[in-house]
Image (cartoon, rainbow, N blue to C red; front, top):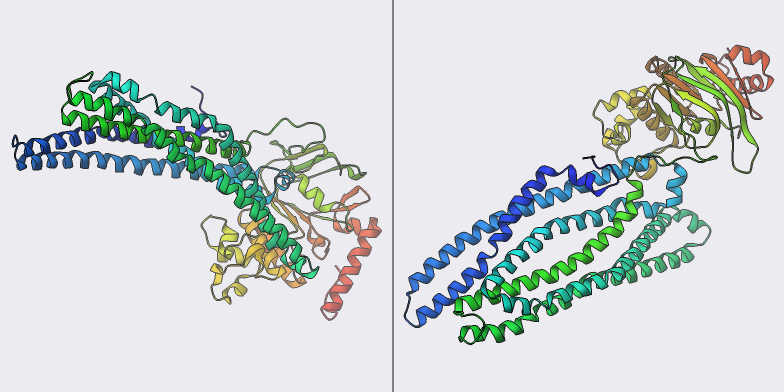
Length: 577
C-alpha cells in the first residue's frame, strides 16, 4: 500500500499507529464496559424493592454495590488510559502538522507569502492547525465514546425488547438529520469566522508595526476606527460560528430524549405484564437508563458532525501549504536553481533578468567560481546587486542557467532577526558555543557587557540593538550555519573599517572550503578578493582588483574616492594599495 504523503490526513495518522492501537484497545474495553452501569442500576433498584418487601437484606445491597464499584473503577481506569493516549495522539499530530507547515512555508516564494498576508498566515499556522487537530481528536474520541458505546447500548436494548427499541429509536435519527441539514450553514459560518480572524490578525500586526508612522501623519484615529471595525466583524462572526456549533446541542438532546415517553408508557405495561415483554423493576430501570445514555450520546454525535465540519474548513485552508511538491512552472514564473555535481562550485551561463514591464536589469551574465574563492561584486546604486544575489535562491524568474554544486546560505542586506535572545538568533535551535560565533564578528566583548549576556532578548527585529550589532549577529548566524556557498549582501555596511577588516580576516579562514559571493558598495576589502565583478548598465566586468583599476575608470574612481575618505577619517594613516 502506498504511504500517504504530506498534505494528506492519512500521513499523520500513519505516524501514530502504536498510539492508535492503545486507544483502540482501551476504547473498546471502556465503552463496552459502560453497559455495566445501567445493568447494575437496574439490579440495585430491584434489590431495594426486594429489601422493602423483605425478600432481601441490606447486606445484599452492600455486596452488590461493592461489585458495582469495582467494575466501574476498572472501566474508568481504561477510560483514563484511552483519554491519555488520545491526547498524546492529538498533541503529536499538532506538533507534526505545525512542523510541516512551517517547513513548507520556508520553501514558498516571498511573493506567495506576501500575497497570502501575515494575518492569514498566522491564522493558518496556529488557529487552523489547532482547530483541525481538535476535530481529529474529537472524531477519534467519539468513534469509541459515541460509536462503540452506542452499538453496545443498542444491542442491550434489543435484548430487552426489540419492538420498544425500534419505536423509541425513531427520534435520534431526527437529530442526525437536522445536524446534517445544518452542515452548509455551519461550514459557511466557520469559513467566514476564519477569514475575519485572519483580517483581524493582519490589522493587529499592521497597527503594531506601523504605529509610529500613523502617529507622525496623524492617522491614529482613522486606523483605530478601521481596527475597531475589524474587531466588531470578528466578534460577530465568532458568535455566529459558536452559536451554530454549540447552541444546537440542547435541541439535539431534547429530540433524542423524546423516546423516553414511549419507554414510560410501553415499558410500564411490560412491568405490569400487559406489554410485549415481561419485565421486572430491574429490567425497566436498566432499559430506561440505557436509553437515556444512548440518547445523550446521539446528541453528542450530532454535535460531532458540526465539529468535523469545522475542522474540515481549517484543513482545506492549510492543506495547500502542507506540500513539498512544486507546481509545474509556466513561462515567466520563478525558475529553479540547478544543483548539479560540476567541477565549478558556481557557474552562471548567459543569465539575464528583468522586472515585468521593464528592460533587462542585466543580461548575458556568465562567470564561475571554485571552492575557496571570495568574489567581490559591486557597482553603482540600483545596478542589480541585490537582485543578482536573490537569483541564487530561485525567488525570481530569469533566463539562462545557474548551476550550484552544494548548498547555499544567504545573508540579505536587511537584518532578519527573531524576537528572542542573542543565542537563539545565532544558533536557531542548534547546540554549540555561541561565544565562538560572536568572536568571529568581533562582538563577544560587547555581549559580555550586557546584563544577561547571550541570553539578552533583542526585541522584534532586533530593535534593542544598534544597526551594526544587528548586522553582526546575522553574519554570526550565517557563518555558524555556513554551507558550500555563502551569499553575503552588504554584510559590513554598518561597521567601521577596522572591524570590517578583522571580520574579513576571520571570514577568509572560515570559508576556505566555501565559495563566497560578497556584494558590497564599499571597496576597501576588494584588493583581497579572488575575483571582482563590476556591474553597470546591465553588463558585468569580471576580473581581479588590479586589472579593473587599470581597465575600468568607474571602478577606479569609486575605489580611490573611498580610500581617500578612509584616510581622512583615520587621520591620514591609511594607504591606497
